Image 1 (cartoon, rainbow, N blue to C red):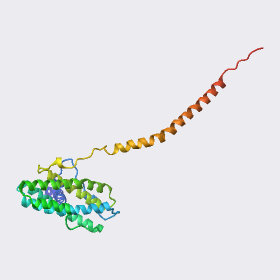
Image 2 (cartoon, rainbow, N blue to C red):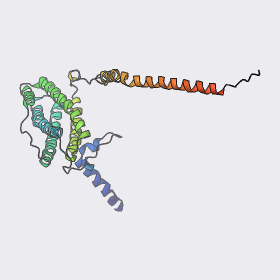
Image 3 (tube, rainbow, N blue to C red):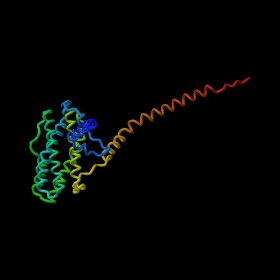
Image 4 (cartoon, rainbow, N blue to C red):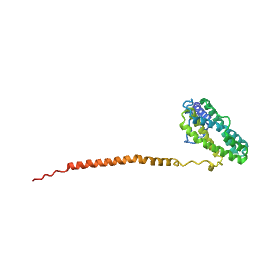
Amino acid sequence: MLGWRRLWGPAIAALALTLIDPGAAWAEPGVPVPPNGLLSDKARGAVSAADRDFVTKVRLAGLWEIPAGDMAQQRSQNARIQEIGRTIAGQHKALDELTRAAAAKLKIDLPDKPNSDQQKWLGEMRDATGADFDQIYIDRLRAAHGKIFPAIAAIRAGTRNDTVRRLAQQANQFVMTHMTLLESSGIVDFQGLPTVPPPSASAAPVLAAERRTTSPVTSTPVILLALAGGILAGILGTRFLVGRRPRRYYRG
């Protein structure tokens, strides 16, 4: 009986971890799950225009992805697409609660309906059924998540506000989960997604221009100084050698 009592503590801790973060129970071995509980959430730090825009965009994502997920359960004939829609819609409801709580702390006004592009995507889905709906649903959501993904990273890395920082980390985990779910459908049109620009495409011309601008300015004084130093060294060396030459005495 005593042995069973000793197991209660670890069992309760594991259950609590699963309830707080269900994804932690399914994390890959060796792959860490960000501990959001270590981040403060006291609305401390300046809130930039980029921070406000980020919170607004997270809210907008839920405003169209929740009804899109509901349509996936009704209009798709693919069980996998139905499950993806159900999961993403449910998770966006949880993310929307986090977003509205953060906005209330930071006094950020949030929209209450999708923007024009999002309404257009929802209209496309309403007009489609079966496999056509599946392709539109998967491609529209995958493209949207790909656009907000780097924006979340920029905010997470650079924001000065702790509440925005925590929301960015939470949103990042939601987005990565949703991208994985969408890609598990097997019908993502990866060729239609924007390509990543080459890493040196924009940096190389700037560096070349800097070299052309700065080379004449910095190299000419150095060359003149070196020449002057060489001449001075030659003069001093000649005088030194002349002074050391042995004197000859001639007898008359």
